[in-house]
Amino acid sequence: MSIRKLLVMSAGVLFFSHIALGAVIFNDTFEGAGVTVGKDFASDTAWSPISTAVLSVTNDSGNNALSVAMTANYRGTYSAFTPVTLASNETFTLSFKVRATSTPTNAANAFRVMFFNTALPTNATGLAFPANWGDSTGGGLTETKATSINGMDTGGLSFGSNPNMDLTGTGWHTVIASVTRLNDTHMSLTYSIDGVNTIINTNAADTTPPFTFDRVSFGSYQQQSFLLDDVQLMTSIPEPATMSLLVVSGMGLLLLRRIKRD
Image (cartoon, rainbow, N blue to C red; front, side):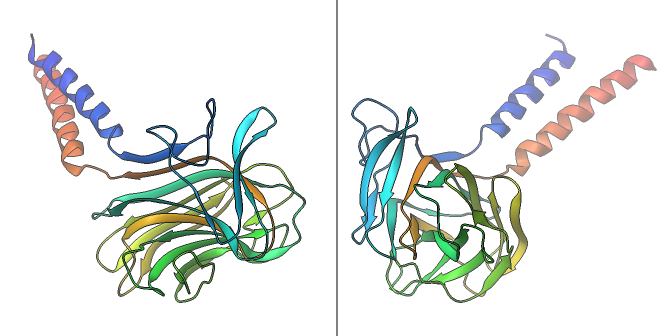
């Protein structure tokens, strides 16, 4: 086999190994015969209620979804998983679809997505991604100082805001929330709804930022029931060594081409 072919093959192998890098913690579509709020398949996760919220898997226009029926304010659901500690440049990403089951009353920051570390004591630092029910003014990236590990309270540092982080109407919205560890005191945060309303903070500073998580929660301080679907949690990390090898392979191909030309 020629050197040229070897270089091409090695570059291809390295490229595909690079884009496949990452780990899916869970991917819950709530589909399947007899599916429950528990862990029914290797790829999904179990869901627990926050306080008196009522959870069930319901059929929504032909597709299953997790129903979170609110019995009062400050209710919701959470999922626990094996603790994940982010390495340098590693990203923790949660993506999901959500919709209100009835037309929501306008309420700023009422819907909350939170990342927790339950190994820390009560009032430990986590991350909160609030959004507005209806058309309201609010929504942003903050630390959370939870009064309980499943609490809805937020406080501490603010990492960015966008007044239009709205969950309007009863249609489905696609939400993505992520945190990337840059170093021991800085992180990059991204939060988007429907790919339009977005907050990005590429250099959020904190003396003790949260980089270990073992629970995600969805809740509302307003009594607004909602559905969740296609909930995926994953980590990903770039691999500089792989990229360096790709560059070397590319340089080798260019060198061979120049030798032939000369």
